[in-house]
Image (cartoon, rainbow, N blue to C red; front, side, top):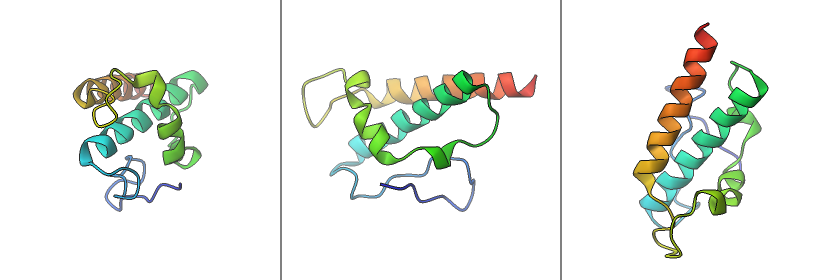
Length: 99
């Protein structure tokens, strides 16, 4: 499933559509997972260019087991923890790219 871009920031992971998951909690978690995957790839490949075009929502869904903290299908992860990890990784990418 392709990612539709936000107009405000071409490289910011947009909010996923309601088709991705039935609740906002799950959609927000998948968004955070995708942010983490993109930041990890940027660090691994040592690139400072936008990698959003190289990722899909399906990759976030496929990565769920790595981030899953519960067997509850309605609350499979802790969104705030995922956001904190994504924020930290994105800050690290920005720091590395600023050098």
